[in-house]
Length: 196
Image (tube, rainbow, N blue to C red; front, side):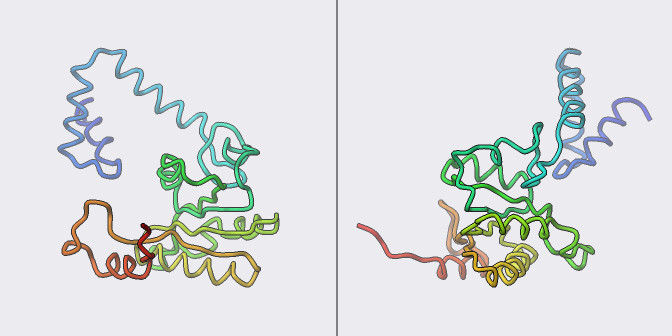
């Protein structure tokens, strides 16, 4: 296999990258100077060499514990539970949440062989002993995400910790007629009074 075909094959293995996109990326890099390609390669190697998971929340980090867990200005009595580090990053970008996080590392998916022991649920329950007042469930609005949120809620509520879930509903700029049934149902369930 020549170098071009090998890189196309490697790019194609990435999630969301089909063969055409892999070809475009490969030929883009082929046109760029050597420094650009080396910079990309070095960034990938640095990612694999320096990044690890936080021993507290399981976010990706270069320092353990991660900067969020170490920050004394964060509300450590609130834990937002997310599926993956990318979900945490999306919430952080909003700058509206000042608590800490817990990354599950996926969702319950019996068909894929992922049960509670395959996620960071035990570690979450241990953290709740440290004076946590609220757990905010921010799993994705999928069947597996909803099942995981329900499972966690049933484990956490008996411990006397408040459990909430982020609201679900229509995206800004979305059309009601294009919304699926679950999204529209959640939009009605999460409705609130109109403020003047």
